[in-house]
Image (spheres, rainbow, N blue to C red):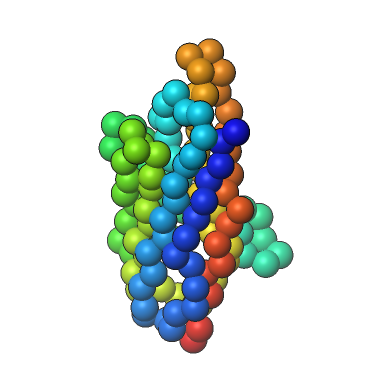
Length: 120
């Protein structure tokens, strides 16, 4: 069974930084893409950033220049460095991966989420 475990959330003042980490465990054949999403109260879940096994990254416009995604998809890990945090960044942040568990089977997986709270 594939499990994603996030860490690194917490409370920070506006302008501060946090680093989120995610590790995928279980029977994994390969992971082509991992990413972070977030969901604020009363809002839909939205993309934060993704990274591919080839190292290509993609960011939501509001995170560009402030957030940096990194990872090693061979080692099944992804990180999110968040700088210049704003109160509107307050949300539950979810790790996501699209994983092949065999050569013929793949699925989308989510972590349990980690709370990030930015105070003004």
